[in-house]
Length: 227
Image: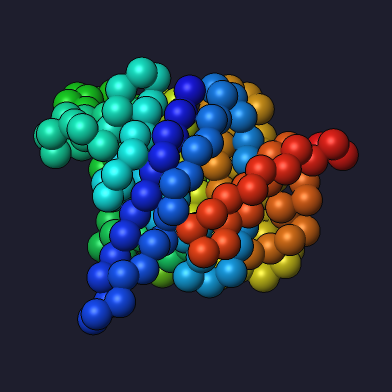
């Protein structure tokens, strides 16, 4: 479970102080699926970075399973991220010189997983997202949708509790968008993940059980009854 308590993130731009997050309180239960929306610069990505331990708040607590990530040493925070949190980004972030299988294996290296098991788990993860025939392909030999599937497999191969996605369909056309969302929602259901996604796409937001809207660092939470 996540608990955010009074989370503030302040940046300084010249002489101006900008509150990307302004006293955010939010509880996210294990297995929740929620979408974060809001205008550009409103704090969406900052909130996701806090949840992922990629940034620290200026003040407040970001508690995951009883541990305040804001207070951890960098080494402990890196360990929490490596073991518990998977990330999927808009730009895929694949290593261009590595095959699909090798890209997925990179997520297991920090966990000390041995080579044979890394290979087996990477193959299984790629098969689970429909890429069993693309193990040896480089990123530039795959479509955008296939590259994002590799990125999803890389995020899930370490068996995280939490999956964070920042505009995961932003670089894809409508058909590829729907395909990737089907994969993400299937993984959420089958693996019992806590799934949190930032998107500007209102059609996706309407399908989420919970919608967090953030404007000028303040949030509102809506339960989508139709979900």
